[in-house]
Image (cartoon, helix red, strand yellow):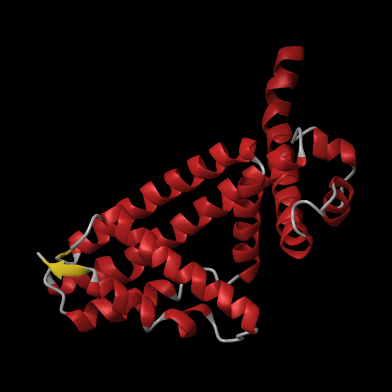
Length: 220
């Protein structure tokens, strides 16, 4: 009887734990973007999430561990958004027209995929916090590089496969090309935050990013 009770309760407990972690991560996202990682306190995060310190420490050992979990979640979400964009816009277009898409089709499709990306400036602030932490604290540097190397490896794979389905390929090393484009996006977002540019993400980048991607690729 005891074993049955424990087995039945386990999924519910696991579900509660996932929801608690999700709420803590959501609150941390807001607090880190608003105050920065160094200035943010555990008390502020748990208060924003509606929990106690006990709930925090039952899920995370340190504020830094929470931050790394947040980075991992957000990067995963953005890879999912990119995959969704490819499935929604590029895959049907290739099916209709075959692999030989012309430049106008490529530009239009890239723009539509960009429009699915999260237009959330808090994410750019949190990314900047992560880099600043790594630059200041050597113990964070390895995690920073690992997370970004893994992210860009997956991102590059998605982009290369998408281009191949459209009958295109990079004219330089794919990983380098993707980083160039990503840096263009990051620099554009940093400038938008500094200038208080209220245009949406696609409005700011739909011309430059697709054009750069087109310039770095060729038909197969």
